[in-house]
Each structure stands twice: as C-alpha cells, then as structure tokens.
Image 1 (cartoon, helix red, strand yellow):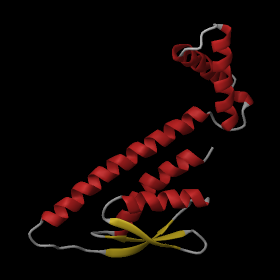
Image 2: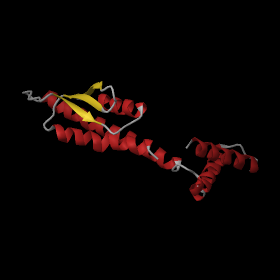
Image 3: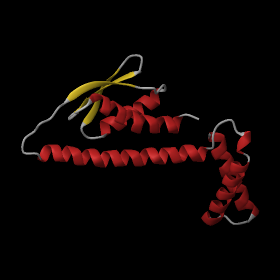
Length: 159
C-alpha cells in the first residue's frame, strides 16, 4: 500500500515538472492521472488498491461519528427519565481481530462511545470485557459491536 501511495505521489511530481508548473492544480491533476494509471495496472500489485483502504477508513470514521451521536442521544434520554430503570451489565465480547492496533482501535471506539467502556482485554487478546450502562439483550449488544465496529476495522486492515 505504501508503495502505491509513493508511486502516485511520484507520478504527480513528474507531471508537475513535465508541465513546468509547480501549482496545486497541476499536482492534483497529476495525482489523478497517477491514480488512473495505478488503477489500470492494479493487477501488478500484490495488495488491493490503497484507495479502497482509504475509503474503508473514511467509512469507519463516519460509522464512529454516527454511533457517537446515537449513543449520546440514548444516554441523554436515560439521564432525563424521571425514574432510572437501568440494566447495567458486564459482558464478554469475543473478537476476530488479531493485531494489537486493531484491538486497541476497537477498545478505543467502544470506550469513546458514551454508555460503554472496555474494562479488560484477555491475555490472549481474544475477548474484551465491556461494561454497558443499559443492556436489554447481551447477544444483541455483541452482534451490534461485531457488525459495526469490528467489521469496519476488518475492512480497513485486511487486504
């Protein structure tokens, strides 16, 4: 992936020199030309195109912002209720993530979302212990995390 980014950048710089114009517009045009060339020659690269990984990272950021907004609203509604009927729970989330940075990212995303916090990661890094402020169904909470954050992280990290 890094090679593709550097190659795209190099093509853009070469385009700038060929046009004898060192402006941002010329660089952007050269970058787009380089991107088209990389897409055309994608069969020569071992990994998938960096553009798709970049798009997956943008989708992960948007997913986090959506979940952050929704959880803020749900915690606000919990606090504003006249009678607190909370069902706090600690549950174990088995994860398919393998790399330390993936587990750290998942833990951070869960902890930054209001109403949930990662308490512990098992020694083999396969289970995250999570406290949630209000849980009706543990399986639904696990599926929600696995089908949102974990799936998006896997999409970003795996080729």
